[in-house]
Image (cartoon, rainbow, N blue to C red; front, side, top):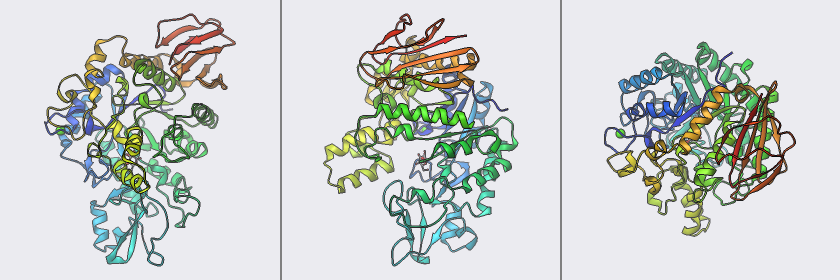
Length: 546
Ligand code: GLC
Ligand code: CA
């Protein structure tokens, strides 16, 4: 049995982590430079978002060459040194495999466009219907998902940007290439793999969608399981100590069980995003709505129990490079910055699954609150600025939405210290630094024993120390509370009680069984556990008994 249940993954967006060669862009040497910091935090595995050769239309998720490092991030030697130095500290590396699509700059796509039938079959080229695209599917970044190619009088599919062409996994030659890429990196000592939007790789049928944007024809199709099993068998499944996670777009518990059950030999765990859509009005991202706390709780409880009963495994996370900062989103980045950031961390880390921390989350980094389109870099945000404008929204309304929803909120440079550009770079960074870096930064956090950073280190240590956190059963508690998210974890006679107040006001709760619990962690000065307990604003407590 593989053991990843006591591990914690730290996600790095290299472009925004640390610049060492003075070009305003973070690089691999920057990651190496900060390994001691990451060790101090307690990270076991570093997931690096793609740093392969890419035109960077989607910041590296448009890969031009899966084997070569983009020179702006460094060289193969730099990477080898990073792997080596990380290993010395008992830290593994997890690479991001973007296998649903390649960049249109990839040589396969270029050969396809030159008419080579072997490579045309690597992608989806289809005839249109009455001068219209083959289907009415929408791209996730806005607009129709098909691009017309005059030379063939055909369209190619791109579920994301027009420069990200979807790969045809039906083609066994594509599947062979994918396994070859994984094997190449495995041999270089990479032990983790994150598979980007991997539940979209099978397109079941090319039909118009009259009730949606096309998702049901290409999401969680049955062949995804076959493809993953095959990839597992031919690559990472041959190594003992790998850890794999799949990013699942608009998925279900049933499907994630299939992907993550060990006996299925597909992946170790899955990301899903349902809990991060509870502030979408009518399921639409580019809207404003306070988060629906009851729905959030329900989703956590359903996924925790569903995955547990079916023997699957969840990746636990609030933040990543695609999500706004959690403390600004479901916490309070002003008056209760510290309390709410710690509470949010506890609520996730004590659940059943593997926690992921996104760079800067351990400092309580906040949204960017950019006020001008010129400050934005993300293709999705820029596209949606124009889409919302066409829909008739005012600039003020659009900026309010971007400030809360843009992926750039997560992509501002890591705040290392209070010096120029937050110590990220001595040159103008590729994206602006958040102006609050003089207060929120790693140097300050490391000096303060009560900081959010040390709260994260404690959460990670608790996971390693207490088997109930790794293995225990998840039992929801106080399900009707409008303010408190609470649960128990149970392993034999070992019990963990976790209480989280999600609001800036006190919460009165009633507990039935409080015998013999000792406090393990809180974000407030200790208060005795009572049957009738008042939790302070954003208070969170973890109690344990044996
Ligand atoms: C995933 C990535 C995201 C990227 C998209 C297309 O969702 O996390 O950043 O834009 O896939 O590759
Ligand atoms: Ca650099």
